Structure formats: structure tokens, C-alpha cells
Image (cartoon, rainbow, N blue to C red; front, side):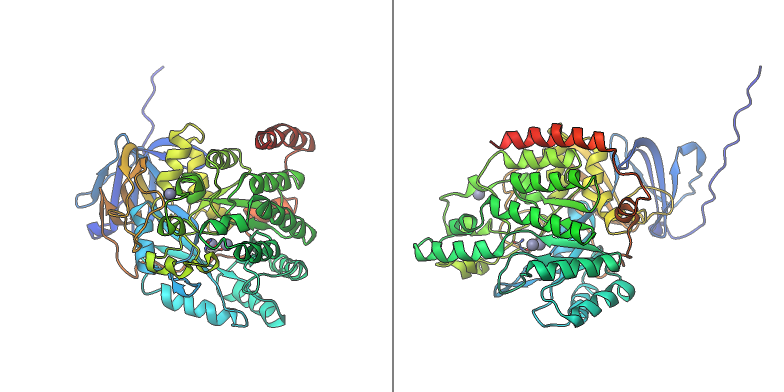
Length: 519
Ligand code: URP
Ligand code: ZN
Ligand code: ZN
Ligand code: ZN
């Protein structure tokens, strides 16, 4: 029997300027659910073709990149940044230009920043302020979460406007920063009910602000006023208690809750327990590049500047085993995402807290190095496979904030936010070579595998073999619509949650085993 070759449908290519058209050949595409060899063709910022080279004809004049031996991955989405944030008497030095430039240099093609209104400030006015800061400066696309820093009828109404008209589906609440942003449990319940009513996503900074305030008073009275007082005032159980409480409150309000910056083993365990208790519904969690890449043991007794440079909240834990523990939670889907919480201050700003650790502006870098660190500590260490790496650095953020598959996937029709990733190359992190505006890097001296050979932001080649060529203002605001199916389908029973027995087995097996590791 003779077999005639299958006719190949060729994709027609329209003649346009070469700048708008990029062809990437011979690479290995890695999405969160599978990896495969294919070529990618991009036109006008959109992926137009994914498939074998035999199915596409490329005319002359198209920029062609040979990705042999390299991976083609969705650009990173950093769901947690604070660019040019006014905080603690200073303004974060990575503004929307330097911060997004650093992001792109490291393979992140979208960030989601936090609008943080002052107490009694209108959320809409604060939102407009953030847009006016970001729009002219961003080098990559961005979205916004909005902080609920106080509670009233007008705030409740404005949440509705933000959801329905202004492209915001996620709202951060605070159980810490007493007297500044902290809400009490009753207000948190009201907020969660309101967000659920609007089909949004609640977020929480989970630390018990009342305990922290008491501990702080005691430490200062005892004369402990250096940076070491920061962690001493907010030890692990202060974080874990708040995670547990926040999950219960969200469950009572039937509201999906995203716990930001999980920084300790015990907080991670509480989050994992809640996820298993509610059978995969309601609760999601993020940890940070900082928590995966370093810990506080390196800093002890190295002097004010070094220690203050590491101050963020919740704090890095003085425990060498925490980073790997958190990575294992990510591997097992007990945690879903990695952010950076990039909020950088220079030595002179951190010095505001000399003699009183409560006055050290909180925050560290991470938006540039997050991708490489998760690769190094996750994939290179044998704890994550490349698909899971894509899930926790990009796809899960796109799904939770409802911009998938526009973002977070290499597929026809998706934005051409693409990183051509060299898993074998290494680089050494340093403040002298990073793209941040800040004078310190908490990962100084670390050599990491996983280097971007090319970074494309909506089809524009913005980084190429170490040369970063971004365009200020090129980024766009990406609205995040309400009711993300990834979050709401499971809550509404449209997607089956794991069967009870499997859930029990996981709870009794995995979580209990990890819990035992704590003792
Ligand atoms: O220390 C931190 N994390 N600074 C930024 C504000 C916050 O709580 O995320
Ligand atoms: Zn926070
Ligand atoms: Zn250190
Ligand atoms: Zn933050």
C-alpha cells in the first residue's frame, strides 16, 4: 500500500516591517502543562504560529533566532512589586522605569504592583496616582492590585468601581502595620464578603499586628533597637497564627484568598492545611524570591547596613532550612506562586532606622533575579520540573488574576511575552551589574543557573544576550477582569475538587510529614 505524504497547510505571512516579525526556530517550548519541540512565529506582538518548521514559510526580512538547545518559556509574571512606593519616610528607589527594566533583564515581562492608598484617601484617587506614575515609565506590561488600608461605606463602593470599570480584581488587606494599614477581624470579614460578592480575589498580608506592636514596645524598652529587633518582634508563629485566622475568615465569607509573601515553614504549613481542609478551594499562596534564595543567618552580626538591607515583612527567618522547605511546598502545589515583593531602598534610606528598627523602611530586591533563583533552587536542585517552574513563575499568576491565556502561555493568539532561556548558562548576581537603581542586592555573590538569552515583550526584543534595550512607556496597563475561572470554577463546583479520600491521604501523608519535619 502506498502512502502519499499528508498535505501541509502553510501559514501565510504578511509583508510587514521586520521589527514586528520574529521567528524563533529549533527551541523547546515549555508551558505549564507540557513541553515540546516547535518553532514560534510572532507578528505585531502576538504569537501567530506554533508548530513544526515544515508547516510555515518564512519570507526574507524576518528576524530569525536559532534557539537550538534552549527553552522557549512564557515571560515571567511577578505578582508582587512595590515600585516607587512611598513607605516609612522614603520612596522605593526602583521606580516604574528602573523596576520594569530590571524585571525584563531577568525574564519577567509583566508585573502586578500594589496601589496603597493612605488612610482616608479615596482608592480611585490613589489608583489614578499609580497609573500616572506607571504609564509613562513602564517598560513591560503591568497590572494593579489595590490595598484596602481602611474600611468604610465609600471604600466598599469604590471596590465595586475598581472591579467593574477600572480593571482591578484583587485587593490586599493587612493584618499587620498596626495604626497604619491593619484591619480588625470584623472589618476583614466585611471586606472578604464584599470581594466575594464582586467575584474578586482577596489578598492578605498575614502577621498578627497586635502581637508585633506589644513585642516591639518590650524590645525597645529592653534596649534592643538594632535591625535584629525586627525579626524578634515578629517570629514565625506570629505569621502562622495570622495565616490560619485569615484562611478561616475567608472560608466563612466563602471568598477566595491569596496569601502574599509566605516567609516561614509554619506559615506555609498553615496554608497547606487550609488548602487541604477546604479541598483546594478558596486558599492560594505565594512565597518570595527572597525566601527561596536566602535566609537571615547570613546577616547576623554584619553591622547595621547589611542587616537593615535585609529587613522586610514578614522577615527572612534565621534558619537555613526554610528556603528548601518553601520550595518543596511550591513543588507540591501547597504554594502556587513566586513573587518578589521588590521594594528597594538605599543605605541612606535604611539608615532612617538607626537606633529604632521600626523606622527601617521595609523591603528588598527580587524582581530581576526571581526567575534565575527559582530555576537554581527549584529546577537545578531537582525539586521542580521545568513545567512547574513555568507554573509558579508565570502561568498561575495569569490564571489567578484572569489574564490567561493572553499571558502565561506560549500559544497562538497569546501575547508574545517570551523568554528564550538557557538552562545551563550561569551568571553571578551582584549589585555592580544588576539593573536595579538600588545600591544593595540581597543575593550578592550567588551564582545561578538559568539565564535569559532573549526577552521579548509583546514581540519586541528587549533583552538580547546581556544587552537590555527597553523602551520607557512601551508597557501597557493590563486590566484583570473579575471572576477568574481558575479560582471560581472550583468554588462554585463547576470543577471537581479532589475526592475526600485523596484529600485525607494528602493531609495525613504529605502535610503531616512536613509538619513533623518542623519538630
Ligand atoms: O517588607 C515589605 N514586604 N515591604 C513592602 C510592603 C509589604 O508589606 O508588602
Ligand atoms: Zn505585605
Ligand atoms: Zn547577609
Ligand atoms: Zn509587598
